[in-house]
Length: 429
Image 1: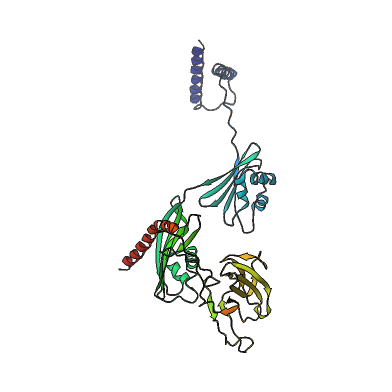
Image 2 (image 1 turned 60 degrees about the vertical axis):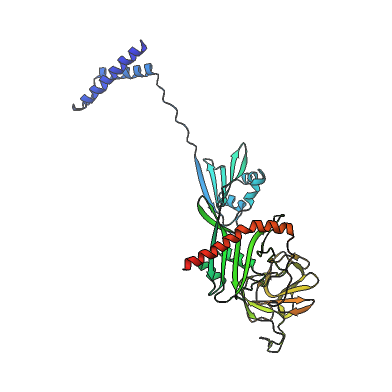
């Protein structure tokens, strides 16, 4: 019965609508028939009565805003929160939420931070892209924050390059398509055998096999050098990467001998010798015959100076015409001296132990110096010797058990090196 009444009412309503449409063609009258108005009111009330139609409530749309910020040099999470006007209480909760939360304290310049806030300006989520494959995410929940580290899979691809030296290791390496990072690693690997400041010759060449790292099909960095060969003045040097049973990684000859010596050939990267070891040299300032008991390396002010061997600092300060000086003892037999420094590396003092390759200071022109350079001395048993020609010991060879593992692990890497040399030869034909 109810349905029949509804149909009748709806039919009547449709009739009125149709009639209204027809009446629209008739000129408008200033007054309307009171009976017609009453009829429309009754129809409208009947439709509402029998349909029981209630308009659904519109859902509230949650408002959120993403505030993006690129980390600048000298900034940390605290300064970023102040810049974005975020709660310091939330900052404390994020850092102390779990061990992963502490990673927010180590932010690098150039990386991106995104803060998602609600309509009241309250932080809901904080996202920090640590690198192309790791992202830190802090999400608000139950009055605190849950922090997680999300990682993408890194693809390691083997690549190779070959170059001939015509100008410098750096320039020719870049021309061969190598990154600055790989070129510096190459120089470090052969730092005990090749003086790249003095001994390179036009026509020297090298072949290097290394890793390219990519995420989601996009290359973002280079990895380790796996194997390489350098021909310097017709002498061939070969190195291959190997990780021993303790997880220590180093570079060795194909026979299993470590390339690491007790001392580096050069205390700086890519520096040039401006004055050689000479016990009868005429001093450029004093204009008298005065022994030059070391080697001078020309470089711009501020260039990092590295200790050439493990040892202990025995002098750290100003010494007469040498200016700012660091002197290091390497056991009972050897010692080195680094002079004319512009400043010292912070954290070092007399008695500090240093490892080979540690930065101890920066190139300057303090003391009696005509221009910025490093004066480097090498002593054996207290006697000054020429650092360029001094014979220094190598580290001990590996035992037989480790040697067997070495052969098995490095054979594929040496095969890749041979393949890279062959491919470059074919490419030239």
